[in-house]
Length: 247
Ligand SMILES: NC(=O)c1ccc[n+]([C@@H]2O[C@H](COP(=O)([O-])OP(=O)(O)OC[C@H]3O[C@@H](n4cnc5c(N)ncnc54)[C@H](OP(=O)(O)O)[C@@H]3O)[C@@H](O)[C@H]2O)c1
Image (cartoon, rainbow, N blue to C red):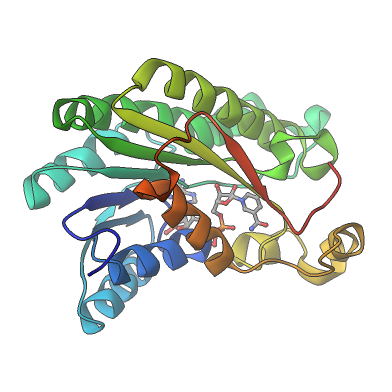
């Protein structure tokens, strides 16, 4: 008996990194998983592995910088599975440009991918969850949502916005729907590599009591906690999963 038997979970940004690890864990726990991202080869590989391991999943290709993407993801989910119980708003992009180098286009793209798509997808799934009387929404923020030294202007702004979105959604979508956020520190994923990996971010290990980078699987277990009744009296909370770095 899995902790998510009979549940349908949309996980954005699940072709890679912590979203992919969460897709594997949710499927292992019995959820039907909707995998999303832009890269078809990786999306297919995630779905194939879940199915090979005896689980159920499908993928939807959608670029969340396009504000039509949430509708596409929602429609495909409803067509395939007829409902949705869990939404993990996890897709995200990094921007390393400081404000004087960050164009309006780049700023808006980061906000669309990291925040606005989560806002739009939540507006679509929430009525379904409300009608069922139950649902769990999880948002990926960052330690860059705690302090500015973890990410330049667009990324930092987008992750602070995810904190506010989490709290406002929790306030407005209860009592049926619980909404919580995860603030990862340095997690060993493609995004971490693109930011310079060990060479550029090794200082985060030094600042963390646990003295290492995290793994995507260590985000997945926290997402599972928020997705299940193990966290039934928790909403509107942001939990840092960062090895204990001092923000
Ligand atoms: N790694 C860290 O240290 C760290 C720390 C704090 C917060 N985070 C946050 O964690 C989340 C997951 O990142 P990750 O570290 O797991 O990185 P990752 O391995 O690069 O995964 C990012 C995921 O987001 C998807 N994505 C990116 N841009 C997209 C777009 N325009 N449209 C649709 N999907 C898009 C990617 O899918 P495709 O490539 O298939 O489009 C991929 O599945 C992000 O929100 C990130 O900001 C990461």
